[in-house]
Length: 100
Image (cartoon, rainbow, N blue to C red; front, side, top):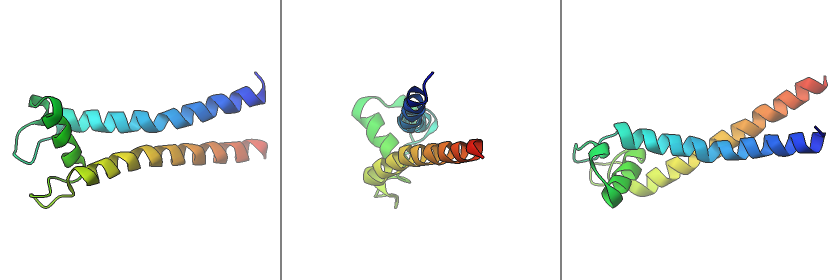
């Protein structure tokens, strides 16, 4: 395989890892988390489940002293971005050491 295709494959793998990590994080919180009311998020459905999951990711509802849904969205985005950045960092480090 040519080097260009290998780099394209690695780039695709690294870029797709961020959304996968964010999806796993969201699903884990939705499955095992609890809403600020004490209800298990897995028993909720639709918009209520989504809102509770995002609030749980943000540290709880605003009324309970957490960051709320906005902070949850920021945290979820941060998970994806950090995984992508670390993936490119690992790739760069491996590329550097494989040349030496």
